[in-house]
Each structure stands twice: as structure tokens, then as C-alpha cells.
Length: 124
Picture 1: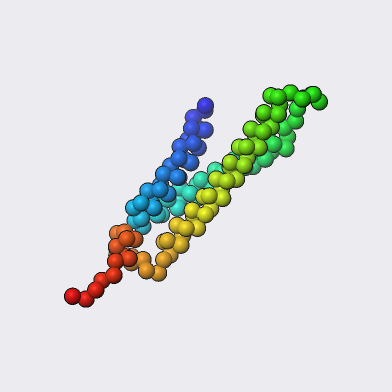
Picture 2: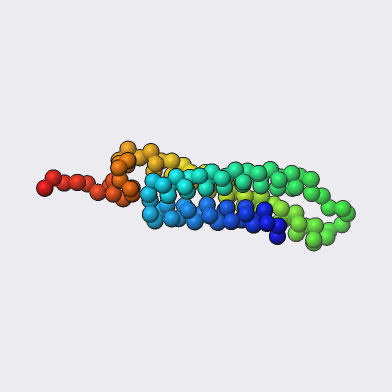
């Protein structure tokens, strides 16, 4: 594998990992970091969708005969395209959830965690 593909794979893994960390420890900074990583994930996925779409439309078998390698190549391209579209949908849903969490009216800017803002303070 070429190094740039490894960077893309790392970016997708980091995007998912930050989303999980933001869910477990919902600080404002972790949510913003997760939001940025998911936006980058969507950008890279859209580039991948364009490349795979071009590859799917330009892929053709050299012969008119049934050759299993040509069919496997075509099916692999379609599977990768479907997986990339699924990644975009999941990342967009996650971006929407994070945006709602950051704009929540009960969130107190002084608190370091979203969990602290949910604790009601009763007078003593």
C-alpha cells in the first residue's frame, strides 16, 4: 500500500475513534475535534465516491466471455462504492448529532463537560 492510502485509512479510524471518545467524555473540545474529523471524513469519502464512480462507469471487460476475474473486479468496485456512500451517510448523521449537542441550550459555557451542565443546582 502506498503511504497516502495509509493516511486516509488512519483518518477514517481516527474519525470513528474521536466520535466514540466524544460520546464517552463529552467535553466541548472533544466534540469540536470529533466534528472536524467527521467533516474531513466526509470530504475524503466524497473524493472516493467520485473516483469509484468513474472507475465503475469506465470499467468494462475486454472480452464478451464470462470471466470470473472480470466479474469479481466489477463486484469489488460496486462494494467499495456502496461502503463509501455508507461512510458519508454515517458521518453526516454524526456531524448533525454533534452540532445539536454543541448548540444545546442547557450547555453552560463555564462548565468543562456537558455532564456538569446537566446537574441541577439546588439551593442549600
